Image 1 (tube, rainbow, N blue to C red):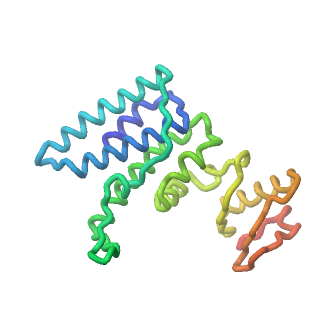
Image 2: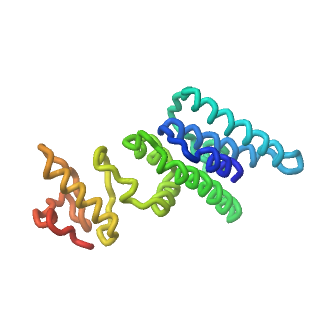
Image 3: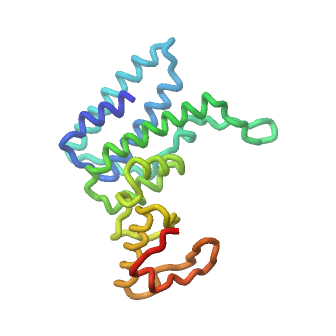
Length: 214
């Protein structure tokens, strides 16, 4: 939580690239691992506080100097913490309720960090592929709830798989944008469309005027 607070305070008036946001996600994941591995009995809180202060200051100083390193991927919380437990047969052992609550709290911290940075990302066209798709499935759901599906949608890079619930007003707006793009571009835009369990669905022309709400 301290790392998120530092970023919120230091980021006022700043703009960031997707690479910088990825590095902050990496560092908050490191902070979570430090918190888990160093208990308060061994000064874990003090270690984390010193690390947080130095790391946040270092990165923002580097960025002011124009130094940005290339980060290929963002590790998930489970990868970083190596929390998965297996029995003698290699089967996953279910997490306890406490473990689930802990991971949900940590995921919320990572989502909060992305929410803070979202409006300050300069190269927004890369946000979906470089940041959003690198988050876990549960983190993606939480981020959509915080920011909104339509706000995360960018017509300029509207490629890939879309799972839309047309009873959701934001999803209908996204469908309208996709239909508009399809009508204004040459070639086939929609492939392998499924609608209410209908495979290879041909989108009716009437949808260009009114998208159904179910």
